[in-house]
Length: 98
Image (cartoon, rainbow, N blue to C red; front, side, top):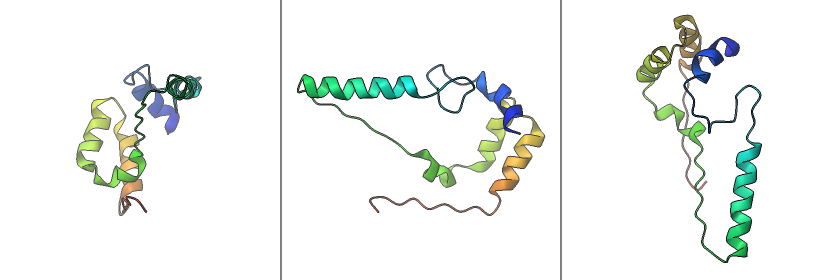
């Protein structure tokens, strides 16, 4: 299923999206982050970094819209149905500071 989705979705992703793509990894982004932190320390300058974990907020996404977006970007309907069925009855909880 994942391989069938990759062809549809991969062409829609920005070049900067490295993770979870064939023959790519996040190594360059990690190196860039490390260099930025090291330079900030070396130059004694402020550095603001924000990491957002969208995995835990997925439950707040309007799933009807999500399924439509899958179809809009070319994911076959049978794949959308499989994904949609895996989320039926799924509940998530967002915890802040805990």
